Length: 347
Image 1 (cartoon, rainbow, N blue to C red):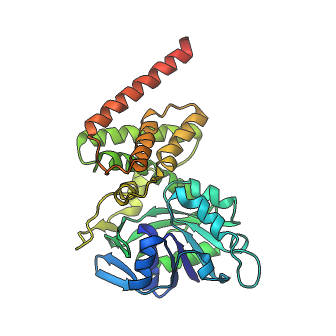
Image 2: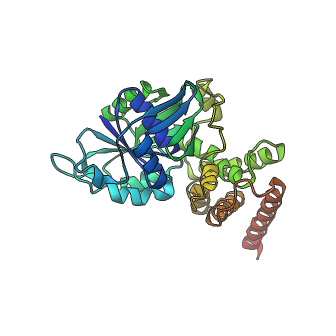
């Protein structure tokens, strides 16, 4: 199989580099300065064993590849806000022997949140979800890093909306040879929703900086609890913290990397790069959506969604808001929702 990595940034670049390092065919898809650096100097992957350089085919769109191959696997690793455009670009691409990518090829959604798979299933017949436990960083154009050891990451994989098949098992086998653990599970969404709850802190980190104070940690616990209450009300199962710890163990331990300091998560990195967009609509915004559908107030996730979008739109530096100020805004938001509830009951 040949892996076409659509969005060779932090997650996609690391997956592509590790797959290539294990001898698998890989094509990277990137844009702008990152595309130019990958084309001119190769993919530089900084990992605990050192910096590895992979000279791989790199394109900025499907036209440079021509017809896709029947053994291609498309790996969607863009941020969710960029998924719709990527799906519309790659879905109609012809495959040698007939039909299109959307009709014939498997599409792997290696992304945070749960929305991309739903978007993908509108276009592609064969969609697979991945729960991405892969600490990685876009360092600079052409350079990505992953500090996990002894494994680079754990990637639960399954069909969307549920089930497994031989394609999933073959992909998992390739990943297992490439410094990943890749359990094939029939209920991949259960793992993704558990990861979604953890990712609710991405916006908090992006807005106020590392969640390393008791004040910030207490606020995250409230944000997480709000998300869990929404999932419970919606009847959506998610893996427990104990189950996640049992699976992870000490398999992905972060180690210091020379020249590649671990900054923050995906949202923090979006603000650092000044991309102008952020994935909060599909993390905290997913909880806000479900809360509205099922009658559960979500003032803290609403607030973080709004603030993260403002930071991205105005290209503010990550961590610019003191955590105390965010706590004050959170208290005001909670009081406002409480007042609205009372007005609805007694007004």
